[in-house]
Image (cartoon, rainbow, N blue to C red; front, side, top):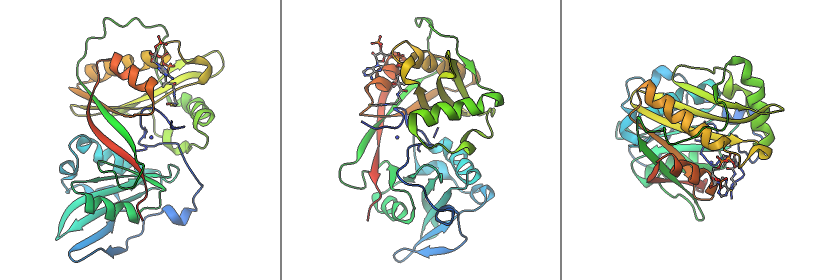
Length: 289
Ligand SMILES: CC(C)(COP(=O)(O)OP(=O)(O)OC[C@H]1O[C@@H](n2cnc3c(N)ncnc32)[C@H](O)[C@@H]1OP(=O)(O)O)[C@@H](O)C(=O)NCCC(=O)NCCS
């Protein structure tokens, strides 16, 4: 959760469906349109309005770390009323842009900076995540990675962690709103899903913490680790990390990634405790002009 996903007032683990926002947007800002816009010669930006439109496109080649997750991200963005665009250069798809309407942050997946810049400019989001730093003062995020299954025997759980069910949706939204401000409730409308689970720790009043794990085949991704301030530094974040790694390993994932801001020492410490190590970078940049 969460490209959006994003010292940052957002989650230390980047959320694809990041709840961090700068301004509310009007609905017409965020609905996809079937129109096509032309870049320079041979370049075209196409708006995707249905998940089926990307089924035959080899999106995985657009990003090594995120490739397996891109169809899932597209489906989620469209489900939540977000924007999805493809950059087509000389007839070949070279880049993907997506956002969620409540995120105010978009994500670009492209093999080269020029295509990433072209796509980032077309979006309505105030900031974009990309493997390229697209504007001055970008915020770097490390992509932490570990192999799975991982040995979690050395971790002593301090809190019961459970998989969230549909009945937990209001409490998850309440927790995330209390930490991040506005959060789109559509984010959790379809949870739990086989490919993506939320894990929670109960607190005395409401949830103490929540975090997501997404598995696509052998690829796992952790996102949106959030602990209520009064429950911090009591091991909730660590327990949520180890529980998610354990589930991913059992479910068949062979690796896990998590994008973590360089400005989030807590999330970095937790990931390192879990055996995750930096294996790449992305940047959160202001939308390039
Ligand atoms: C990051 C976050 C998930 C940590 O959750 P948590 O439940 O407090 O984490 P844990 O108690 O498991 O902490 C494990 C270890 O991580 C490190 N750690 C946690 N928070 C830290 C912080 N703010 N600064 C530095 N190290 C930190 C410590 O080494 C800690 O071990 P210790 O308490 O024995 O010293 C929580 O602070 C959170 O939800 N933040 C969301 C908002 C956010 O990311 N803000 C970033 C602001 S810079």
